[in-house]
Each structure stands twice: as structure tokens, then as C-alpha cells.
Amino acid sequence: MRVGAHQLCASRLVIHLSLLRWLLALSLCGFVHTSAQAKTQDYVDLNVVAKRLGMKSYWLAGYKTYRLKSQWTVIDAAKNSKCIKINHVPVYLGFPAREWQGSLLITKADYDHVILPILVPQVYGRGPDLKRIVIDAGHGGRDSGARNDAYGLREKELTLDVSLRLKALLERSGFEVVMTRESDVYIPLQQRPQIANRKGGDLFLSLHFNAAGSATAAGFESFALTPQFQASSKFARPSGADNTAYKGNRLDPWNTLVSFHIQNSLVKGLGGPDRGLKRARFLVLKHLDCPGVLVELGFVSHPATAQKLRTAAFRQTLAQSLYEGIVAYGKRLQRIQK
Ligand SMILES: [Zn+2]
Image 1 (cartoon, protein in one colour):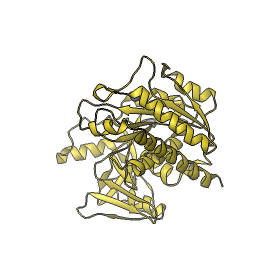
Image 2: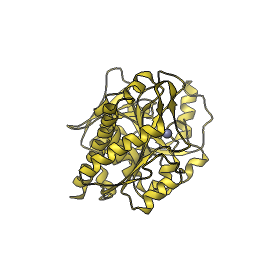
Image 3: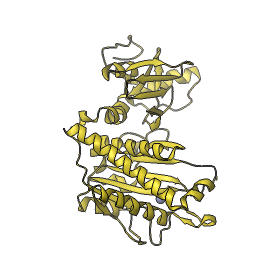
Image 4: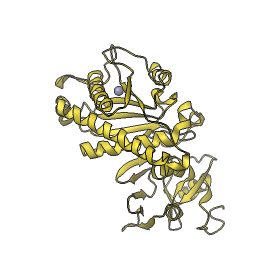
């Protein structure tokens, strides 16, 4: 159905919507000043999505945020925003939600790559196993990664410390663990996913810490591989380079699901600031044969975080939160595979 020509039909989930016409209409209203690309997106009405998933849906006061709600799940989507909240965890869509004639719409691509994998992953089949977990301690050797010299922190040491703590927790629970490095050695980025593939890993978890020029930047974030035809979270809109599909994209639903559980567990364990589940085409994620997630566990450049990172207790809390995220993902897989 072509929006603009007909009324929205609630019985149809997919609304064919020309982004060109969208942008043109918005430009005429003065909201968007951009050169429109002649690209067509299919959109879905969140009211229809809610009905299909057995959820209630309604606008919150102020008419900016649209809520989908069930007994276990609350999804808040805001007009013209790429960030939706699923059970309070910010999750970045590929495209902004758009209002149309009193309804809020998201792209069919985001329905497929975000909503379904997190809410009803079973539609993608039985899912992968979760026995052998590959932990990738970021950086190492001549590559120190982010650093805060005033606090004596180097990312390569923090990632290895948390990785070894996580390894111990996982092994105690009967998981098999493969480490891409267990000492202060340099491993090129492209070798890290190769290790996971060669060892037959069921999950690849890459651990990192952030640094920023501003001392106020804080919080943790999880990255899943960007789906084909979408811009990574730091870019406003897709480019031609985004048309490439990588090996890791075959596991898109599980990349999303595990990243969501990891981020959710970090929020529970650490509080915040919660920078959300984002998308990036990191080299370590692109060529994986198993689901993968890259986690940025905090800013070494943030003084209060740096102070905490000096303590073993906080590094143990980081490992414990990651562990609980992996276990939650595993339980979800088990429910699907019953
Ligand atoms: Zn790093």
C-alpha cells in the first residue's frame, strides 16, 4: 500500500513507503533539509506490531513517545528517533521511527533486525548452541588501547583482567572457554575472529574500554554487527558501502539477542549510564561463524570510573555482569530449543 494514496490498513503489517516522498514531505514542512535518496523503505505500523505480538499500544502524554506493553515487555519508541527502549535498555534502530497520520512507524528492516530477534527469536529457528565461548580481551602487547596515565590504567590490562575473571566464572558453570589471548601479547584484529572460527566457538565476546577527550563521557555500550543496507549507529544514513553482507550477518538475529542480554545485564549489575545496544561493522565481528558482541565496558577517561576500575571488586562486578548476560542468553536459547 502506498502511503499518501490510501488510508492505512491495520490488517496489513507492511506499509510500502517511499523514503523519497517522506523526506520531500518533511522538507516542505521545513523539518528536514536533506538531499533525498531515491530509496524505498517498507514501514510497519507499531500499532499493528503490538497487535501481532499480543501487546497493548498507546501514545504517552505529550504525544512524542509511543508505548508497546505486555506483562513482561515495555517498548518505548519516539518520533524521529533511532533509539527505542526495550525494557528500558536503549536499542538503536537502523532508521528513525516516523509518525504518519497519528501512527508511529518503524522500518520493516528494524522490525526484522530488532523487534523480532529480541521479543520472539524463535521465528528465526532453534538458534545456535552455547557451549564453547570465545573471550577476546581487546588489544595487548604493543597495542595498549585506551589509557589513563593519571590513574595508571591501560585498556589492554583491564580487558585481560576482566576476561580472566569471566573465564573462571564460565568454567565453574561448565562452559568451555577459549581465549584469543591469555597474556600481554599482540594479536592482529583479523586473527581474533579466525581463532573463534577455528576453535568452533558458539559465541564471541570482545571486551574493550573507551576513552574520550571529554572527562564527562561515561557509561557502557554493546555493539552488534550492523545488518546489511543499514548505517552503523554513528552515521545518520546508509551509504553504498553499507550494501555489503558479511559472514557475520548470517547470524544477525542472534547477534542482536546476545548483545541485548549482555547490555541488559550490565545495566542490572552496574546501574548506568546505559549507552545502549548499538551497531558497528567492527573487523572482529564481520567474519564470525558464531554470534558475536563487542562490549565497551566504560570510559577510562572518566575519573570516577577510572577510580573504580582500579579496584578488583569492580572488575569482578564487570565480569559477573557479563557472565549473567551470557547465562540469560543461554536460558533464552534453551527455551527456544525445548
Ligand atoms: Zn579497545
